Image 1 (cartoon, rainbow, N blue to C red):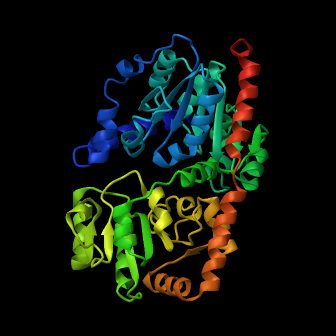
Image 2 (cartoon, helix red, strand yellow):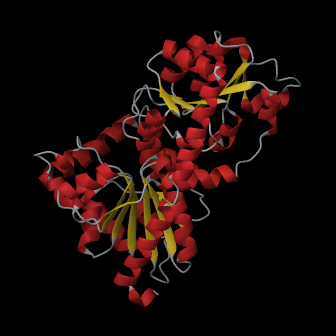
Length: 420
């Protein structure tokens, strides 16, 4: 199985290289990893105390962020390296102030793993959720470097728990400690004889609570809203935007729409401008208009502040549910906003929880979207209940970061007593 895993890594890199001729994201993936040895060698190891955090993409970074911040405070003498797999994470957070170094992770070949770790010499490695790179894990394990996975979540249909997953199960046993989101993940790991597990919950709760308290005002958006109710659609894809467009003109006149698409390249922005025609304005153009209240749709053509503007919504729609998977529903939920999303939500515990509790709603088409929106708009008791559920749910889930940092401190004291 190890042989096939390594073949798959090489095939994956080949596919990305071929895709880079016509796909900008793939090109960034390739370009970002050029001369990675030289980039890694810029990491200064004067004190020989480096904590390596790996995040697959921007979403995983947000999960890592509160842990990184508290680690930096707790272990002030250590340096922090963050690696990203995806350009969507690296491009946005390459200048993150709480990290000493931010680079792309080289592809997970045996040669790369050996070379990379021989250069950076981490004293602890922390991975977010389930971004498993088994050659890196193996090299860390052989060097007796503690490996932590946090905010992890496991499901019984994963290959670790199948009859053909023996090799993968053995790789998981090289992990020093797992911090998982729920009881099911804990039980699944126990079922394959992995006991080094703690149920900590998800660090994203700590992150969104902190971020919500620091949410910034946006005067241009406030002028656009002008006391109207807002349906804020965040991290949307074309499939989401299409079903929203289908019913938008059937909603009450005092409803305005803010769309913050996942992809803000000019081609996609133009599609949205054409879709809503004379009703729409771009966020970047607001300052050019004296009266923006005559518009009913605003398209956010910038990145980095979606969480801040969820506070302006009456109801939030989170995109991705008609594709691979929904995006972050905790960002609107922390403000007490009822959340709507499409059917691809099964990877996220909070989606299951909020659906069951009545703070979130899954829709399969435009008709269902219209029905739940009208009910939330017309039935104030129903709306208030959903809003309170979201607020209380997020607040009750905080604390994962402190639990993880406490365990990390214990591990460091045990493995590196001379650093205390």
